[in-house]
Image (cartoon, rainbow over all chains, first blue to last red; front, top):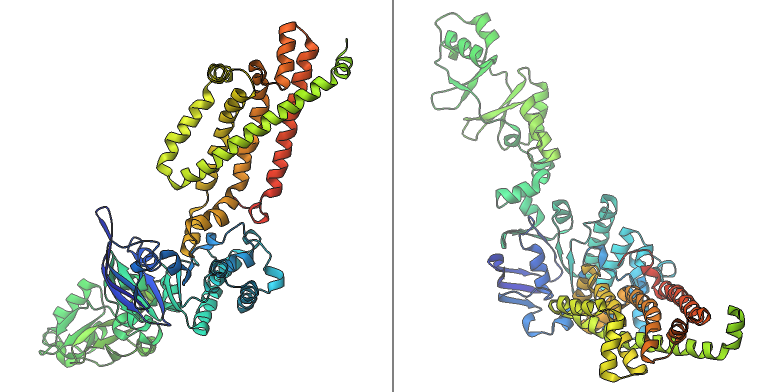
Length: 372
Length: 214
């Protein structure tokens, strides 16, 4: 439907788009996202020639857009910008009908179209058609903005941060409506946002851009599971490892103190005192997990000069790195030791889950990034 | 002779001066509009030209009216023609400036939306830019009209007639009645037109624009 072939755009010395190549399939909801200045808006505006690239080719429906008349091209592609885009001197009806009128669609036809479209978003014709944009709420204005883009039934609709200025509640319901409309009318939509929430909610395909290049192009699910770079990861933030995906390895701390089983009891007591802990993780010579030793155990059973190997207990619960965090959480709550040991598949120690490490990981999941 | 007696006695002369004055103002503003609105639109499409052109028009505006009339007298002699040329020149600037800023001050979002949905430059001008700029353009016409009504009194000096004729006659013969017969109607005319065009400005503004700033 839309194909970019090493598209380049420069402003002076600054490269905005760097040999950008990708393809968008018919009927897909594609979201362009990335940090400001990454080239997402430039990419969008290249599709209807509001911005013309310096190099490369863009095809819409198999046709090179540079060989088409820009005005006619734009009439075939719907365009939605922030709410300011409604013409203030025209009524709702005139705004929606503006492209059909440019295309010389007969009056009865576009009037019917306006009625149908207003019905789609539950804004009855009689009450709304003759209002001016300034008489509508922000959410209603943007609904009309979307309808205007759909009025001439274009197969492709471009949306440039259309909901950026709306309050969260209105934004939520509009996102839902637009997604429904897209499914119902089978449009190809290219949507620019800087809001990952919005991207994940609406997209079939997310294109993550940075410095004029595509960092990752993937479905939201795939992006969540395998973010291609730390930047993508930081944008995904709180969405990473949602629910069941959260693993024991995500909630453990990996820098833990391990000692060999040959250690003398006296030495280990000294070590625990120095580190201000009351137990140690003990490993075998081949680095596999052997058990734990607590200061109480040494006091009650240990004799001076013996090795700790004989005093080990297995009272601490053990999980594997790939176990779900939820089961580790349950074990942690019941654990007599107050911690859970995490093992690699080869039985070597991967880390330790404590109430602190668990709380920290949950905080990050809930509030994102380095909030904790 | 009292002022009222004077008016009754010279009714015909005063009325004919009044109409002469009105027609002088009407044509000066009309010519000013015909020149200034298209030029303003062209400047809005070629913004690099705007600064020098507006500066030039501003310079003309600063030349005192008497000097301009004197120059016009040298070129075109006595009569209505030189007066009309000078007054039209003065009418241009406010309309030109308001047309230009009216169009260029429109929120860039509207312009982008208009381009993005596939309007040609001309469609954008007629359907979006001019309707939104209309109140500002009429504001320019209002300023011009009020200016020209008062400056047209000077035109009597070079034989263009109008209420200025009565004032100059009064001044040269120390006749207060003549002076008042010219000054009072022209003052009332200025106030009246200011109100009238102000009302028109509000009336012609599309309903959707009355509550928002373009």
